[in-house]
Length: 406
Image (cartoon, rainbow, N blue to C red; front, side, top):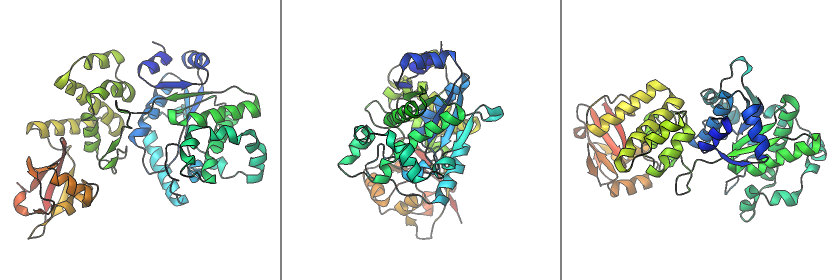
């Protein structure tokens, strides 16, 4: 099977500027392409997972990726999909985010022997002369056309700042720069970036007379159209300090039945026929496919050893026996008269807030050793610990271990 067909069958391909030309380039040539990531946080999320896998498939078939980290464009802020203006980040925060994101990229991309390039657009964006940039680049953009772009239309009623209005131009300039300096001829990205990608392609055509291409992939959505990677505790991060390895594993273990096959195809490297065989089942039997999905994605992000620990811990917590080593552990000190259970859980970030915690506990969503806790004012006392441990259950399948320390 050729690469383009495999990408289609895996569910990546969404929109293409020149479908047949792109199909030929991907299948028969070796090209340089790029995908951009703005360092808005110190970790990437599940939402970035699809484009990282997209990039990895391309590289494995001989194409050379440029991983562009937006140290310059993040200063402006991408309005796409946002109802409000992004928070302005300090240079110190941006640089800290950049260093952490770069390490995550290396799990997907082989940078050895010049097989891939990582660049920071701050190296050219922050050096631009404003007046010269307006004369040379700004004149190539029609405000009327820009206002028709989806990324701007949805913000016009609530308000769009002038700095955000520049984002499309800056991203287009990135493509122009990479085309000039690195012979990059294709931009890949999530489908929400379509307008920005088209702008870059048009800018290169107007300034250099060179034909380049844009190809978007499907966003990671559930079967009911919602973005994957969101939970009651917030986003699912790729950094284990922000989302524990066990919570990461459990997120995929518990996704909806209708989302399993699609997610296996997009977020693992398992052969397509193997995935289809796994998913030719109904009802409870789909749990086997969910276990495979959770193991494979955890292995990609956190390594095989951590994936094995999570698999064993998950089985142990469901069956009552086995190795609990992979479950998230927290050390807690308890006063003689006990401590407010809710405060402990919020402090450990097992629950996102006191208000959400009260609601969840009142509805029976938290258990200690399978006994539901319904009193938000419960004091956790030493008597609750068995052999110095409390096994805590949040929701249907999220487990945590609290260790009593002096």
